[in-house]
Length: 228
Image 1 (cartoon, rainbow, N blue to C red):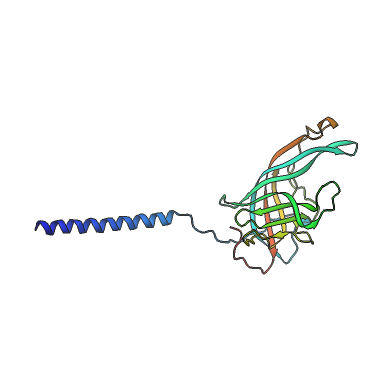
Image 2 (tube, rainbow, N blue to C red):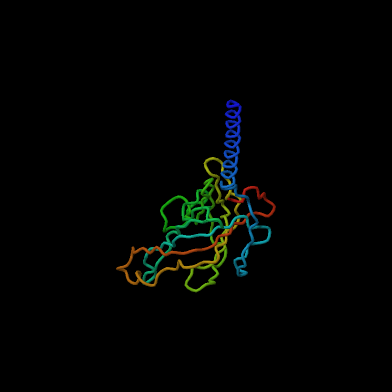
């Protein structure tokens, strides 16, 4: 009888251990981050002058946080702050990093700016944070000044000469981009002080800003990734 009870207790403990392990495994699996899926991107309401032409649809939205960076330069008979690069990170609604944002040479476009030393044209740039695909864009419409004391809303497009590049391992999230909008801006305007005389030439200002960015592609292209 003693051996029977011992075996019974050991069997019971074994069943309980398996049950506990199974429960823990299920709980751990549920707690793991679930794969992100492409969601529908609703285009923003914008002034007519920066609406994206028909035949394109929004496929990626990013919330930008960073700075607009200025340098004081001679201008006419005086001086003024000139933007030399934005420096920002774009996030999705869940706070996951999507892209970095800056100025860089577009390798598909010859430089035509006599004030810039280099073979390639400097363009505003976004690089995907996961697959390193990159898009360069140029201003495509007059800025829409919507909010006081904030940088303007914009529409930009990929230059006719080209401006998209796959990442080093073939990543292509941003290579489908045709247009980009910058909307819902806050901050980022050049300061009113620090660039008032020739003595100030060379001064730099890093001004915090936020903005939403919408990336468009040709209608009908696959939504398989969505950039998440």
